[in-house]
Amino acid sequence: MGVIKQAAAGIGLIGFMGLLVGCAEVVVPGTMAGGGEYYRYTTSNVAKETLMGDVRQITAAAQSALEKMDIRLHSVDPYTDETVMSASTAELDITIKIVPVTASTTRVIVDAKEDHIIKKDKATADEILSQIRIALARKDSQEELYSKVFVKNNCSRPIYVAVRYLAGKNEPEHWQTRGWFTLASGQKKHIVDTHNRYIYFYAETRLEDKLYWGGDDFHWFEGERFGFFKADIGSTSEDVTQSFKCD
Image 1 (cartoon, rainbow, N blue to C red):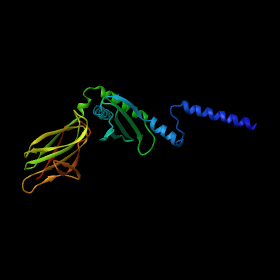
Image 2 (spheres, rainbow, N blue to C red):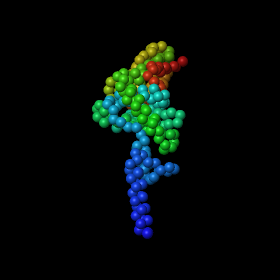
Image 3 (cartoon, rainbow, N blue to C red):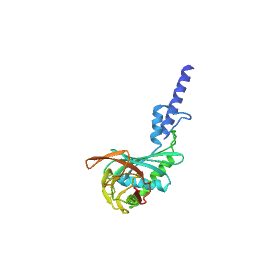
């Protein structure tokens, strides 16, 4: 009799394991069933797809998608092997990873999870990816998201401005420092275009009682080290103007 019970238990266990294999996603209520189940849950509940387009095009399409869905974009951080976008809603933390596969194809991974916990929102991640595809289909999507950046001299003296920004409108994305832009008193000048919401400035006068506008983000430029200040120009494609006052 004991042998029969053991055989029945074995058959039941095999049947249970068969259910697990046949199910696309199994989460044990109340807790994760070990490291393997945790891995399956965290990897299967993201939206991912390889799309036609380079990193610049996909990043622009993702920004357009987030804006259309009224999802707040916090940052776009380009790294050596991927670009990471951070965004959020009132209830979700959203991460979009954009990974180049070839020169013309890019892997997109969208992860939406409830703030500070492991629970993921696969439906929202799928919809973001869908909106990225739609935005990518619009030929002008990568162009409309670039902001024109202007500087204006509200000082009574001429000023000289250097800017550090995420370039890449017609080239691979990279951080670049440009200057010096010379502005007479009252003058306004268009200096760069960028799709990143953060940009850095340094400015100075070069007469007696020299004045400067700077911060604690230090970079080398033309053989000297300057401290740039960080400006948040927002995540839309509107033109922005950075003004400098000395009076």
